[in-house]
Length: 237
Image (cartoon, rainbow, N blue to C red; front, side, top):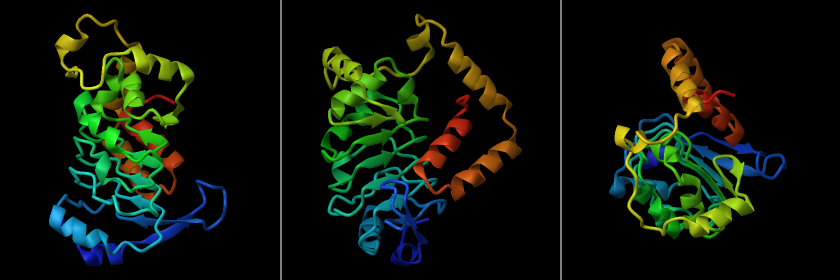
């Protein structure tokens, strides 16, 4: 489905207090679960109809392959883009004062697909990439911190001084990425937690998945989305 001005104008809106602890503070525009596709011409003209100020923009569970171009927006501090088809991160397209970016469960598998994060606003402090294959590559966390030295939280875990030190000594940015294949893991030690995760995912019933997906649709906070994403990806609590 292509995004149109009417889709944006008719999008539900509500106010959330998850970020600053104050009631009715941040307006959130909901464009999730619409099977929206990336169309540069239609997207650009349609997104101009997002009301100002909008603080949180929710594109969860669509079919976007590109990050929507919102670089001229200074009011949006959070974008939820989980469960789309995004394979390359274009930091230049992000709102100029963005703080929180959720890209969980997209199609990011290699380090070079993250390099566009370097062009992200310096205000970006919190990034979620869980559910992408790239998260399982050795050195992933250090690589992201190297791309975003101002980052404070990655995948719901605070960036530590040790993370920052390790990011300085790892291979330089732009180094060849490691593709995920049997060859890459042949000489790696077995990760029992990953084996358990795969077992849990394999045994999850379709009915349970439907229930979790419905809960994801109704989620109204980053914390709720994170919890449900963990369950859907098989992470044991």
